[in-house]
Length: 285
Ligand SMILES: CNC(=O)Nc1cc(-c2cccc(-n3cnc4cc(C(C)(C)C)ccc4c3=O)c2C)cn(C)c1=O
Image (cartoon, rainbow, N blue to C red):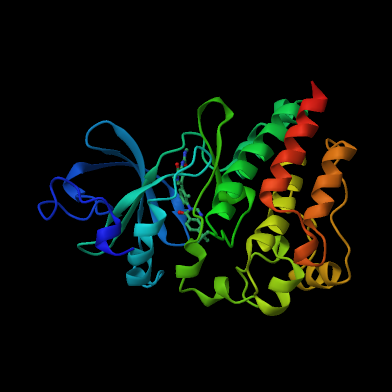
């Protein structure tokens, strides 16, 4: 957007651009883990706001492209998206500062709470609906995630679930991750058109969302078990899909199956998925 599109802040010219965060306002705390770009730490911003800070390891990300994109990403705001607060890009390593989610990744949360969650299909469905709402917002903004999976969603207080790291896949420099033949490429969440032509779209996100629903209703099992990536590619191209999880009743599995239509145009949009899942959850009451 050209500067004239953005409302001019009263302090125009005095402060950094609004997506630029002053590192002096950050107080770094314990390490939360490490991801594709290096170490992530919990922190405090302006003394009180809980944040997560990704400290970008040199050579892991195409930084200039990302910093440009960060301006767009800070504008994507929804209660089921992990909010990007801004970046510290004046020196290296650059920091990516986001909202902090106290219970960590959805995948680990499902595995840690399998017993209690397994008995609560209403809650499992609610988690799926929250992710769907976040994804429907991205779809409305023509924004593709490219790596939607339970590991890339985060859990906050009161079982709030939010989609994280949307769009970041485009800035990963590791070709083991970016090329579909690479060891880190998320084959088990990829539809035929991505496996064959790396053709990403909101409909390829819908396929991945179906796999995420399967992860949720199995409380964090690995899709296709211990099958090798080559075996999964072969099955997906032959139209073999994941089996119905025990905890998953038929109406929900029917929605999952629609996400795995071979042809992307046949798959429902996230907007339609959201309506269908909400009506299934109302039928539960
Ligand atoms: C206990 N609470 C917490 O731990 N909370 C949190 C943990 C993390 C966290 C910690 C370590 C690594 C990663 N991580 C994991 N996978 C990633 C994958 C990608 C792609 C590009 C491959 C999709 C990019 C970045 C990451 C990444 O930074 C995250 C999200 C982030 N946030 C916001 C939290 O609230």
